[in-house]
Image 1 (tube, helix red, strand yellow):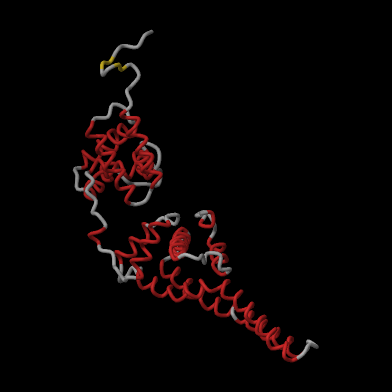
Image 2 (cartoon, rainbow, N blue to C red):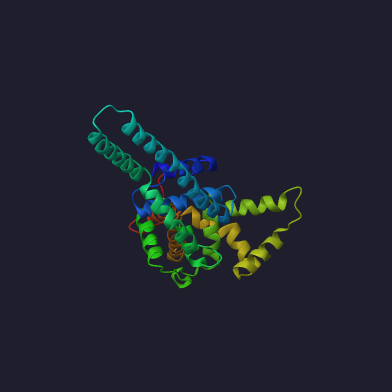
Length: 295
């Protein structure tokens, strides 16, 4: 959806909210608007409390905006009754028709907005991270382009069905897979190793590589020597996609599963392409036999 452009600045998102440009006709679209709003606030290093305060304050802007069409309707009716030189029996029906048209326009403009205002309180209670952390985490994994996921989330919210931490599968990645996932997140193959080198070789840094590997070993429950071997060699070799054993391909599939669960589709697709490359026969192979290349 073009209106959920993640690169828009925070002030433009707020303006579009005030102009009711995110108030669609479907409940799932409003859920996507909430998710898009939180993404924008989070990208600007603001807290969920700031986002919640904004969407609460937004309702008062909507209520105030009702004053203008009400004043317009009142003045129009007054004009129809007092100024027009037609028979009085025609003035009242005309005033009623005109006010009915005005009321219809107002309803079409803000009818869904008023419904959304009523549901805002329900939404904020449902995803309050201090009380409903599992709900909040599920909300954060919702992609703001995923209408089907938004509909499912909305239905759970209306039925007051809370998510459970058991529904959020615990990570079962081994040490190599965890380092591989971090390397994929950072970008090109070997980025994790490059980052550690920059940390330890910077002029203003007193970190040692052994110390970094020891800390990573504590975090990932592995020996520093094994962490070092994976970061300096294995992860980069796996990401090259060449001569991968079935075990390495299974590790890639496990990492892909984590990215898919987190709705990082592009990263999951990147791993899919790497697996396809690893399965493709190399140049020089024929029927599983490695023939020497011709000069």
